[in-house]
Length: 382
Image (cartoon, rainbow, N blue to C red):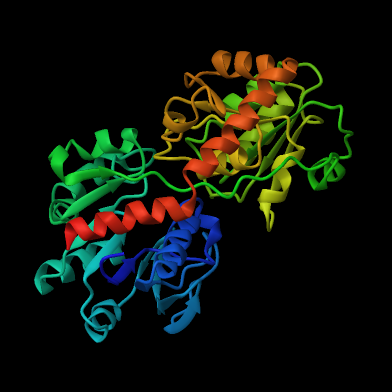
């Protein structure tokens, strides 16, 4: 390492706010590995912990994974976007950093930190975490705000970081290609498949011979869960476990109504959030990520590291890394998803080959390797 750098992360939420999905462990892993490389990492964030709980108004400081996290009192919030009035004061109180890494888009922390950086002459890296292209809700409003209030956040960045080619193409709508770099997210350490039945099958009351498809992630619109329920409902005898917190989109009720209409209530299981979903992957025959849009897809990385063959749509950034190595990549539509699941569930050799390939990809894209890529990005910026 040429230089030990002082890096500030600015994020709308941070660990232990795991209800907000993959971005939280991404930031935590990067912070831990960068400190292992000898860099100083400070994090400024809100006190948000979940979609439903009221955040604390009290500012506090904690040490996690070698980094110092400043949880700023958050009197107002909308979903994972919190208003933190002390942000500017906290940034001024820190020693001037070499570089700031801004995570997220269209929130108070990223917008005001970018503004502070521009005024203070501190270079910053912008990583939108899959939020750059307006989608799902209030698209017209987001487009208008992107041209006004949030316009300078991406344009003022020294570099923008995309987790995949999908996200890079989205950023190119605003930024020149020379100011965008692709840095994939890291994978967990490869794991050998555990003996079955494990925790998940015992909870469902099924033996090791019963075909089981697993989905992990937020229960939200755009995750393709309706397609997955439809596909599995048409596969005789196949069980589906959907694991993850409700994101407040009304999708849980929709899934309940859909499985009842399709007559698969006994085979489609909504298990809610679990403390450690990693221990569930080994029980699955196939993992499915049928999302309409994922800048990466960390849960598919977890499945690959666990040696579980997966089906992902071509709208997931991680498909670029796992295609025909750890996953079958399909179009975003129910028939393609059903065909791929059926093919994997009857072909033991194909599942085993993709499982082994997924572990190989996980070894190549370890968090330590990804952190070195990120440190090189900071050197370019500095």
